[in-house]
Amino acid sequence: MPTTVTSTEAARNLSDLLNRARYRGESFVIQRGGEEVARLEPPMPRSKVTLRELVELLANLESPDPDFWKDLEEIRENQPPMPEDPWGS
Image (cartoon, rainbow, N blue to C red; front, side):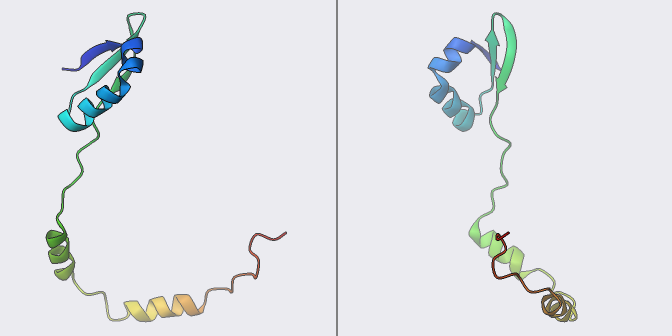
């Protein structure tokens, strides 16, 4: 259940509230004049993948279709040239 704080308390203690949200997972309802005006909540959890797990995931990926590299090369060769000064008028 979120903790209710006034906008004045939130302004005076913003750094503390941000730390509590980030590191303790606490949520806050911010009120002004008794009316809810905002919520401060921790970010959605990020998936935590170690470097070792990432290496394993990449090692187990299927190889691209043999024609994939040919298609990429064809796309690269058919790109129009960039102008000398793309930002010039």
